[in-house]
Length: 255
Ligand code: ADP
Image (cartoon, rainbow, N blue to C red):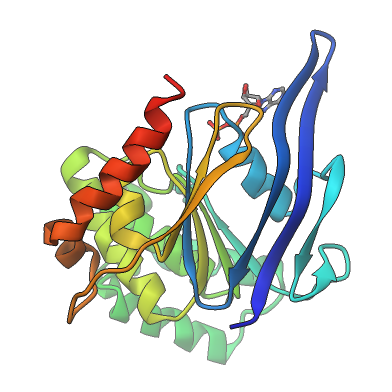
């Protein structure tokens, strides 16, 4: 498989009047097209910083990031970013929230409107098309936020703790649900999470980071011998505990 994303020797530090905060040190990895990669590490180690660099919101101090072989400035790869908070606007209906990105890109037309309706139907929000975000449950709001991202047809999806604002039970079903949507749509995804179970249930590969400044401790391929490889099936499979324990042990050394 071709690498859609490649990071080579990335270093990043924040600078303020208080001094320098080194966040990332010598980070190199690639992500293949269609792959679901999770990034885990101790709190404050630099996970969000890493996604911000890939999204082009921050510039690396050293090293290079390429998308399909081109630097971020030259790349035409469409990158979608989904954050912890859904950032749905209460003064817009669900439908108009979903169209927001398209409006900004001047791409609202009969075809994209039809697609918005199809996605609403596909992801169970058809009856909430004209509702306000506050009428939706936490899980439904995250689905709406995902549709708003997917409608822009991102080739690479960056997910920064997208489920962590939800209560435990909702989180479990929404992460499984959204994980399946992303998988079935064949998107390449990079998920930052502090929830090890979430990482094991969703990812093809898990990148374990050290304490700040983050370096890569281990890249763990995740495979399950399952007929139906869904997050819920994974959670009940015998391999699940082994993967969880491997990551747990690695992270335990940083406590
Ligand atoms: P994580 O996502 O792993 O919790 P972050 O990437 O958010 O970690 O942050 C990594 C480190 O950089 C933390 O110590 C954090 O306090 C620091 N940091 C994050 N943003 C800034 C900023 N804008 N200015 C200074 N330090 C920051």
